Amino acid sequence: MKQFIIQKMAVKNLTRRPVRSWSMIFFVFMLSFSLMLSTVLVDSMKDRLEKTTDRLGADIIVVPKEYERSMADSLFLGEKCDFTFDKKWVEDVASLEGVESCSPQLYMQSLAAGCCSAQVQMIAFEPETDFVVSAWLAESKIKMPERGEMIIGSQITPEKEDEVIFFNEPFKVVGHLERSGTNYDTCVFMTYETAQEIMSSEKWYETFRERPDSSQLVSSLMIRAEEGTDVKALARTINFRLAEDSPLAAYTTNAIMSEAIQSTQSMGSYSAILVALIAVLVVVALLCIFTITINERTKEFGILACLGADSGKLAGMVLTEGVLIGLLGGFLGAAVGTSALLIFKNTLMTVLHIPELNTALSYLLALGFKCMLLALLVSVVASLYSAWKVSRNDLDGLLRGEEM
Image 1 (tube, rainbow, N blue to C red):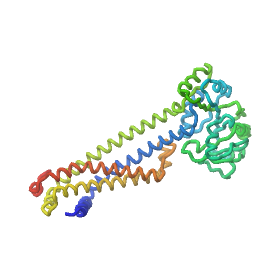
Image 2: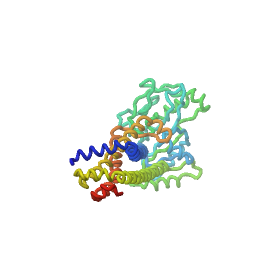
Image 3: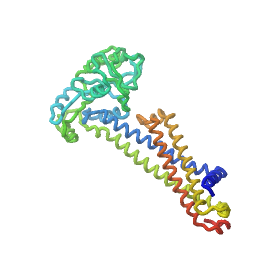
């Protein structure tokens, strides 16, 4: 019998038993679908961590001791924060051996009200000492903002292209940063002088009942270590050298992101274990169904053998059925998974507290192809035992309908 006849018969066998066939396809579908979703979730979080760490550009961050978690949430999840400490501590840190650059940043939070273009994180920095924001501006060929000017993140869209309003005060937009896939895409950057204009406004006083001096306030101190310096040792030195009454603590970039890193690693491990368990269950389920099915089809195989089908062709028909089930189940799982990610992206990000999902079409297509390959492999593996049993039975046994 020619190969295309075997394939045609395999298709007919599947269509003739739709309940059995769709049950097997469903098992493979769940494997492909689970792998698709879990991989996108884990890859997105890993990618976010890497981009945030690279974008930060600092080896060590100094923040108030009780606000380490708030800083991590701000960097990774984009949560708004507005903690501060006295700028007098900056000189103490900058004078330590091993510190190459030391630049303060001030975090302010705007309001979701008519007085502001958007509720975003506002970040003030010092152009004279800065090595973080200035590097981004150089990459995007944007000039350094002056007093009354701002740089906005890629995801901020003001009503007027060249103007934003905060606390009823208009500010000129002199540049849009390129998309980075980090929380900085929803931030606004300005100089300390511009920050003082905001804090001196009537709306600020009306809201917070204070007129602070921004020049004396710092939220985080970004530190770049000298080349060859042990970053962890430098962080310990900073913590040791600061006075006992200091409200500050120094953390390496990895340390301040450690909880997010551990959560991502745990999610990756759980995901791998889950997919492995599902794969095993799918193999077992398909193996059982294939075994039961071929024992019901012994006379069918016997008749085909009488018509000239040798053991290899009979085994090939069973394997073809496994291939078709794997391809269809894998394709449906990848397609439904891709559609769900594209349609429910924002919902998934909100429910699962994930700051960003990678839904680039090229990435999803490549991942979908890998899911289909795994689904195909699992389905073929499950059908191998049945194909082997069919190939080893003699003609008389098949015609008598003996159990294989």
